[in-house]
Length: 605
Image (cartoon, rainbow, N blue to C red; front, side, top):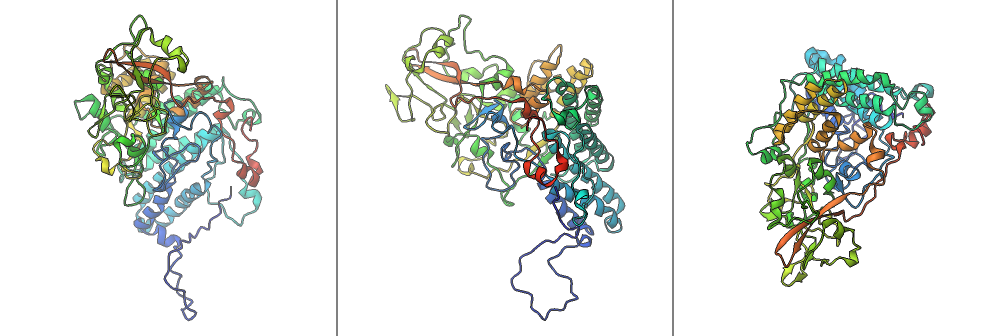
């Protein structure tokens, strides 16, 4: 809890020689940066801000829900992300192995923000009052972001707004836990200050006033749903009884109103990306074009700075990369958010296809821009997914899949070299069970993939596309959900249809909360939102109750020279369960040991 640092910040720098004993003692040490040096110039403040931004709990390309926020250049385990623990994707690890969290406790970072807020007003003569005010607004946004990362994990946490004196009595340093409602209210108030004080524009990678409004729409929607749905679906215990975990149900509409009003503040300042008439390419481009009018707050990456990521390498098969392997694949369950794929006839027999790519005909452009289907192309190569060969096929799809594997008449292979009467049994891109580098579901991730990168450059930690942390489509989804919860179906329908029109989808003529939630799942797939949506809606224990997800397996029917697709269990055969206690994570044990005022812990921990 203490995270003790001196107010005078000592920064060690490398020196080539020892300081000699004859050096004059009245010369200030060159390796100590005082507040005057740091906060007395814009460059110093930016340097200090950079450390705070670097620690923000942005769940990006490198985020691992079991290990936390990674900032180095050697972090590439994209196969274990939020999507892979909720069934959007599946990988060799997943399920709710991570329900207890990883002990996130960023009070050292919060201390740095508190230092910034305390020091900036002292240097208005050098920085200028207008600049100080804008920077203070930015600091309030940053502090709110850290507390949002805490609140959605633990509920109520200690609200610390001053720089604690390490020499103070222990009773002052051991701050009490605040109630969950108070924590969300604090986050909202901080973001209000951010919106009021910050500028309309800022440097790339830094927040502006609209980022504060956008984050408020996200945070207040979270609080509103916790109040409404958490009141009916929770685990009881002392923390719940005392208000540290849970919000009174009668507060829900107040939070929904705040979420809606915050989302409306961005209207006219941001818009959906619609620069390409090709709806598929347009949706692909919005995640790769830095000039997108949809981007509100983004996180930058660079090979030069050692912060590049590996999304291109670890989301694509080795066949299409220089040196990598995929280990996480979209599920058929996700794909069918868009509706059932046309792979069976009315009598239950599999439809026959002359070419695997025919399956993509007529599908929504947003789906094709989100997931690579069999028959799609990347870097001049085709996704030739083929699970195996049937010499002939008779009967229904369901009856065939229900058979034990050893009684099915298909031919499988453990490598791409094995042939059946001169024809490859499995594709270069899988699916197979012989290793982790080929799909286990029949799909690959397309969102955020940079198809323009030559194969020779698609290697680990060579990707630089930014992570779009806040974009206007999410804000419209927040607005629609809040509007629906408040009974304003008309506005909800309007903004959902804005998103659907951009996606190339048929507009809705009516709207309900289930349609809004499903739209959110389609639009924000693989953006690390679905995990938190399941938690805040309090449906994770239902959706992930002994859940097993499916893939779509392409087969070649040899005697017909046709392809069929069968819905089968994904080949990792993962099992997913969610205990209700996971709606909150436990207060980290080490922190409880240092500060008994953090008790009671969350229920069932």
